[in-house]
Length: 173
Image (cartoon, rainbow, N blue to C red; front, side):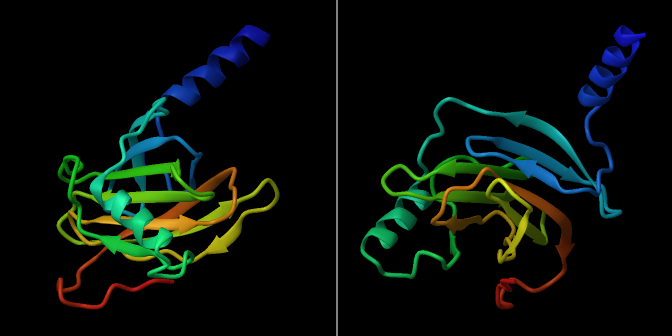
């Protein structure tokens, strides 16, 4: 009987998260690629934890600005993508990593969808998840969110596409 439960659990874990609406938990060092289903759900298409994640030009600019104290470290910064290739069309790439030259973590969100992406986030420090502010993500533009403290992970949910003109103000909440 125990073998049957183990096989069922393994099948459930490898079946993916098709149409998932519960939070997506991402931990430091992970890169996750998701697709939205149009009904409020999402599916993980790739999930990896690479040993080394390249530093993009946008991330370097963000770190330089923080180092020069050109912006408060708790403010999210949206930077035009400059280095690595964009995510596949109709997919979202989430990269959660430690900064290379200072304490803290960043979440890099890249959307291949033609519309803006809105989502919600909760930080995990070991106890109960706590709400945190994040900004909308413009199509094909790298969005960087920064947390100066150490986190165990993030719970991301409420992924939805917003039909707004590119000139509209980016909303952070």
